[in-house]
Length: 317
Image (cartoon, rainbow, N blue to C red; front, side, top):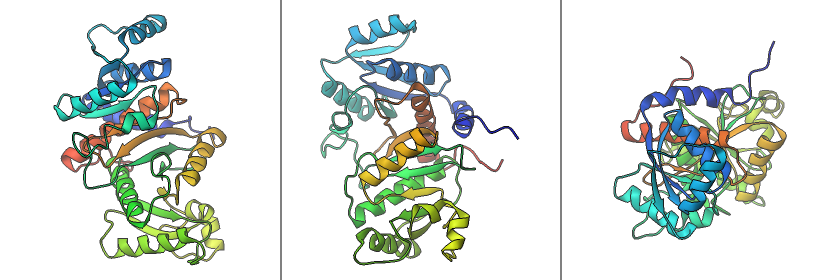
């Protein structure tokens, strides 16, 4: 049997959500080839309507080098990446954009104006990043959070991270997300704080403090995603061995897991920050254009769900 093409599930998502029309998107500092081409390819697919913000000489020169047509696009000049990020947030607040997209700049510079208490894009929910992974070794998409923003989240921050990930999973068509809260073991041990947090998060979900998904933990990585490993450990759970979402204990674990899935496991990835007033497309500066296009598709799906409460697609269909 021929193996499915890399990233075929994310490609299916792209093909479905482009039918919803382009999402007006402020693209901050697209001053590098994959950053600019990702935005332009997403535009050509009908996913976004990009507003390019940054050093216009660099952007136009890069477009010319790449043979990219920038005619008809809105370009806004900024003296540096910090100003560009601020201008992007202002476009969202003014209703001229419904999404924000990171180009070639540091994440902290990109998010600095987003998280401002006055004039930012914050809500009562903590912002968190979610990777959507399309691994050739799994038969479904898997979400990983938080591997990019929260360094060492406390319990209540993890509750927001978990809720954000559930919301995004539902937005991309996972009707009842199964969430595994990861630790090094699958039993509660006070000497391992992540196992205690995982158990509390599971109980919070039972009591309705986290909604929309099935939450279980602590789970180790193997028995979260592998049914045989879960069975071998004697875990009777609707989540163990079948997790759609993996919540990591800290940014170190999350970053290593995500990079392993991409660079060792051959997964295609997309990345989105949720918990703000609009979807925030955030990929690594080293990510290729395909990852940026996939991230735009996830943003469109989240925008549809956020505005209508409906999933952009049904994976069972």
